[in-house]
Image 1 (cartoon, rainbow, N blue to C red):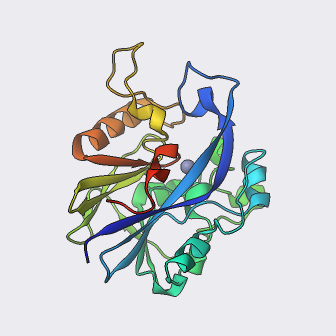
Image 2 (image 1 turned 30 degrees about the vertical axis):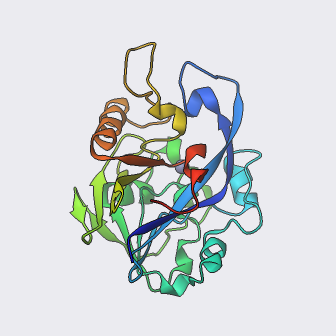
Image 3 (image 1 turned 120 degrees about the vertical axis):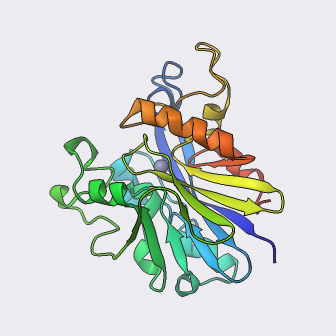
Length: 250
Ligand SMILES: [Zn+2]
């Protein structure tokens, strides 16, 4: 079987367009964005990129008004494809913000891959990011608490169709996932490319893409977006509506 990528919308987050997506355009405009996780398979290996967001109560604590509709949890999506959590061989995390790694403990047989820098920061985040990582310092229990990871540091070729590569900036240890298919190279960008608007030219500054508003390091964020655009034939964003264009890629 050829390599296939199934996007799963794990719920909706409400956020300020100007603050998160297009700085300078849309401050004060509240928008609702999908939160993507992906199932990737060649018919033999069963793989996930991220495990998506939490149930509504926790989501609403993070961003007021955010919610996970019934049937949108990661394992409920898999069930529709006849896949159980125990079938998953590996999960590649783009990063460990709450909306990308909730429910990861369901995957009892999976190997978990994360960038070393991301794991270190997630376990001991800066005060400004306690909430994003559901830090124990807030009395919370992060989804990755007491979970064993395999850390990668730099580019990592997992098999002949999956390669992880670092795309820091949104957070310290962000990485993206390159998937080779019969229809070219897909890059599952995670939040290194936040939404569809970020793929459009920034006409004010004469750039071929629009840098997003949410980052820990603006220069790394900019370079990572450029790197993704250079290696991808197709880009699947972390929170863009465009991902819903097809139920399975390519
Ligand atoms: Zn996100």
